[in-house]
Amino acid sequence: MKKFLALILSLAMVFALVACGGEKTDDSQNNDGDTSSDSPVAITLATGGTSGTYFPLGGALADILNKNIPGTNASAQSTGASVANVNLLSQGKVEIAFIQNDIAYYAANGTEMFKGKQVAGLQGLATLYPETVQIVTLKKSGIKSVADFKGKRIAVGAAGSGTEANARQIMEAYGIKYDDIKVQYLSFGEAASALKDGNVDAAFVTAGHPTAAIQDIATQNDVVLVPVDADKADSLIKKYPFYTKLVIKAGTYPKQDADVSAVAVKCMLAVTDKMDADTAYAIVKALYGNLDRMKSAHSAANAISKDTAKDGMSIKLNPGAEKFFNEK
Image 1 (tube, rainbow, N blue to C red):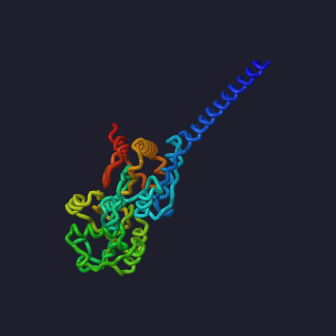
Image 2 (cartoon, helix red, strand yellow):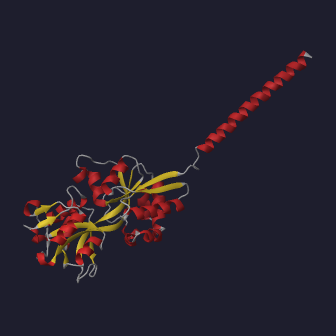
Image 3 (tube, one colour):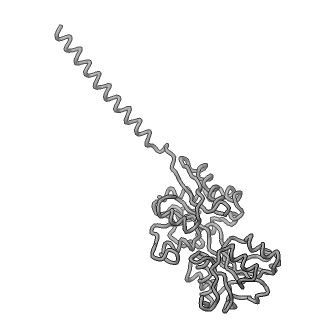
């Protein structure tokens, strides 16, 4: 009887151990499931103000990523645009940012508004569309070339802004320094008003064309777009590789009878070197496979093309994006 009871007790202990072992196996499987790739990958896109171009395009891109990359939870965030977006990227608060390629260049090289504050690890995914540096004057000013700026009142953009850097660099190509002109540090809106009111002789405006503020001036005044000559554009691009050449077609603005040669910076998508090549490849592939969605969000996207995606690329291209663009 004692032997029988001992056998029963031994079997009970074995069953208990097996049961405990089974529970551990189940817990392990459950934990594996909780940390699996089923969890969505969050991608935050830094854009710009809600009334600008970056925000609707960012929303469209987020929609594209959510629908074409499994396990992605992408969202667009309204921000203060290029400079703010670089800072958000460097702080790890966003994964993708819409920025101008000149701002990216300054950040990566520690110049202009990023002097002494170089941002390491910035990478590009693609350049998207041009943001034209438009030099605007009125016919009555007599200004026909940047070379005519000496002694004139020139609105160069807000102090420390990207536009202000554009103005300084273009005038530099013509041998004109700030000491040669009457510098007016005015924002985009202020410059348009000052030009209309006759308080400045010419103004620099960096924005996709046609620009509403310039169209507004042109409805009541004879607006003249000052060209950037081809040789000056070439020397500019040699020194500042983020510029590209383009033509503002005749008829873009009221009473504009001829094409005008200009230079532009480009809107681009930037990331950091924390983004792996496979993710970058998937993002760029999804973008260029769904351009109709981008075009439906804003007309600026009509200029987005895989053929020009590396034009004006001012920082290192992410290896995944490079792989995509090298594919036939």
